[in-house]
Length: 265
Image 1 (cartoon, one colour):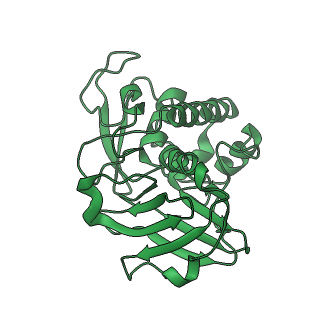
Image 2 (tube, rainbow, N blue to C red):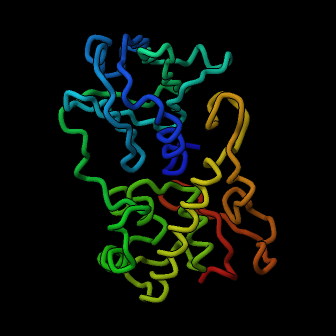
């Protein structure tokens, strides 16, 4: 499962102790990363933020180290023995700690730039600009299925397959309906569901779905907890906890979508 907003936010919060520290040295172990040790060695970390699914490490000199975790990446202070072969970059801090960029599938990216903001990214669903009115306007201009709309990072930044499916179930909306066809009442329900699902997932440190080296874990030793609250994702054929009918799965734009055909209309 690729890290989505709650998982990336969990990593960002876990890296908070690195703020104010200096990158004493760096080991860039994968030449496919668009960063070198010389780029960042000696730089002081001013802030670590999330934008959509990106981690933005702001350096005191104004530059940004931008990391996108993609399918299997993680950025944290600890590294398990089974992860050692998949470390692509290490930031050695001046207090003796180290930040590891572990990425078994090697699809993640890291780059140093002057302006780290991706202007194509949409509104942050846990930010103040994500209002009911904003979602109404965005949805009203889209003829895409509402599930595909939620996955479009140009519209709403950070939502992926798991949390889109869960929010639509909470809002009782069929994922195949066109975004522009939803009523204001339905959009308002969806807004509440998105904020609620993402907020709860962040509090549960995200979702861990497996035990392989590629699966998301907030720390090397422990998994997340939101998988215990999933209502539809990965539950094809199981009874809906709201109505008892079996959960169905369809394919939308090459992605699986699980939903309850009775509850979600």
